[in-house]
Length: 245
Image 1: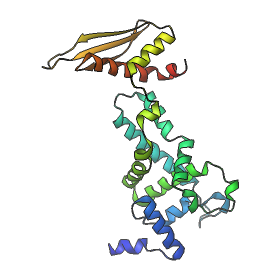
Image 2: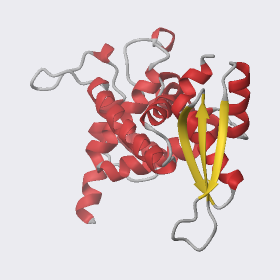
Image 3: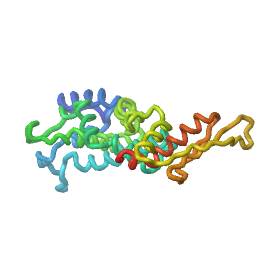
Image 4: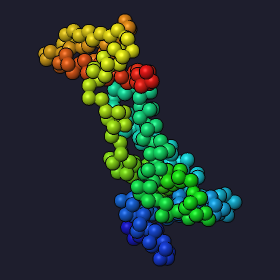
């Protein structure tokens, strides 16, 4: 522990203030402040290291973008087991969209840490999202993947990732499918049958077909639940087409 304390001890008053603000923001102790300083350094300063490599947030932004995407993808994969690849990709894109990341950066007021040679009026709005991603990259280099996961979960997933809100809340998928089919003059059918198999409790299966083509199936302990499961899967399979017509 003494060794750790020696590493994190700030060298001057400015570093001390930066350290404690970071600690409050991250909810854990930063170890190597240089990673975080780089995450908030704008290219306009034209800083370079001893080898001539630029010192700014852009490479950390690239790293943070990849880590953020992987954490969100993992969360969605586990949270929505019935979502297909297209659905999961679309949902991840909504979470990590530039507008959303800019909002996150603004909410955390990350701009207060940025060092640059240009005024705030000249800075692109995208800087808020860029430095948010760079901060994730700095956390990864400083504390590793688990701390990145913790930060993203606390700052992104818990407050902002609402599955129903992101996909557009639908109270009844069966009702939505029927309404869409009627609007677009499509023939539809919900065909149900008992499917208990080796289980003692009665189960039902439902096949949903549109224009004679079976799109999806659902199975549950009641016909109504099975219909809703099947209809939801139809929605996931056809959502792009449905939203554009």
